[in-house]
Picture 1 (cartoon, helix red, strand yellow):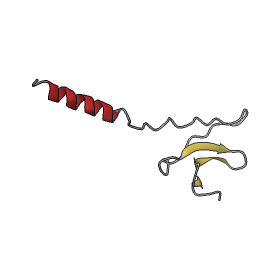
Picture 2 (cartoon, one colour; picture 1 turned 180 degrees about the vertical axis):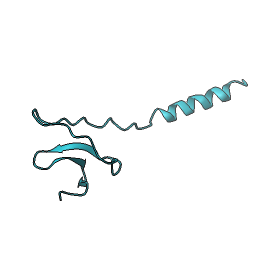
Picture 3 (cartoon, rainbow, N blue to C red; picture 1 turned 90 degrees about the horizontal axis):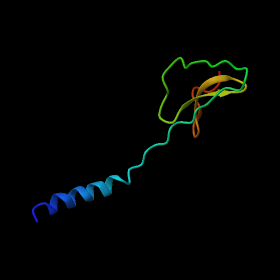
Picture 4 (cartoon, rainbow, N blue to C red; picture 1 turned 45 degrees about the vertical axis):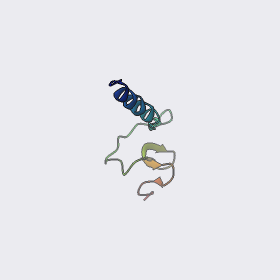
Length: 73
């Protein structure tokens, strides 16, 4: 009976951790055919930004909610 408590604790811990949320991998953005890839010149401005290609302005950091970082100048 001494081993029942640690086994119960381990089972409860395992059951609790199985509900952890894992963020999905960032989507991979590729330029259309004929467009050269340009690497970022500075670090991502925050969580959720991805390096993406805009057909009119070129490469930049884009966030699905906040739009393009630093806008288009």
